[in-house]
Image 1: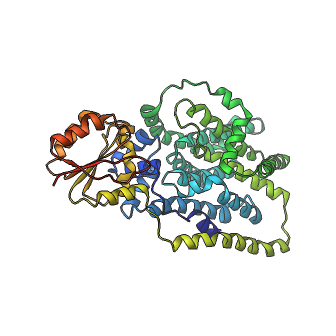
Image 2: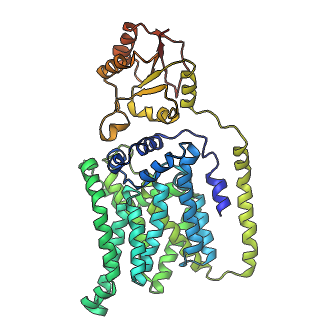
Length: 478
């Protein structure tokens, strides 16, 4: 399974330039530790745990493969947890669950992105499994383990708050169900460890919750309840996460129904936690994000629902094949070997092929042809985050991206002519060349940048390569 995970998800992990979100995450994580308490929430709406970890990793290396390698490692640990510690499933069902996790479409993003979702995947699965064990047998040790993993989950991903709500609902329902049988006092005593763990988690989560409300909350102008009530919302969200053919998705849903029905027949009501997590997570994301964000409800926000479906499908698979014949285990190594071998060729080719240059690496190389200090402006400031990662070790290149507070820490979405003029005048004594990543030819470039270059005696350079279709004019002085 580890080799399969390596060949499936590590291929081309170090090739591509960081995406905008990845570059922004790297840019935030490289700030001072004190800044990281609040900046991830103000900039990305995310809790700070992943950014603290990434800050430490940046001190070792900022290569793409190394930064993405932490998410890959978290996903590997998730697979190892399933294989060696998920006692709720037999080994054959665990193998089935691992294959679902590896081959689902969303898994490549979870396992490779320089974003907190790989860490959140691990923490969400472990904390939810620990909660099911705590519900069945409330002990102090299990309560402490659950509280620690739940806090790690909540401080890894913003939308993990929906998971906490589902956990709390199930915990409250468990205590309520015990009242007729044990009475109030005995029920509270029996579930004291559970209640204390939930209380501690909620209290410890409040600092981030208050930060998120302070920096990011705004009223939602959209009416999203219709989306929450629409069954196709849930079907489409899960289909987008798995990207499996329709017959396979129907089989997956059938296994989930089979799991719930079988567990309820055995009076294992804790199984209801998993479907509640599916519907609760998707409903919360669509209710909260649609209308508030232009990017809408992304599959990564609903990662806990993906994990819950995988877990339910594995439970259904276990009930479908409760006992595995010895002959099947003779075939399993052959199957796994064939799967690994089918992916080995691509990985081998990747490891022995020179990585192609990214667009901003090409831009950096073209700028480096000019000696001396250089400064480049970006019409849309936060797009400078791409180049900021590429030039991280080049002290001769600076960015003009009009940094601001909170989200605009990565650069405002426009350049002010006064900012351009002031920045050029201040940098001109020590800067030989100025460049401009051009989005709007008739904007500040024409009204402020070019006249300032002419006023200071800078000469326009021959055209640089277009980057993602955009011109990058440059001016230098002898």
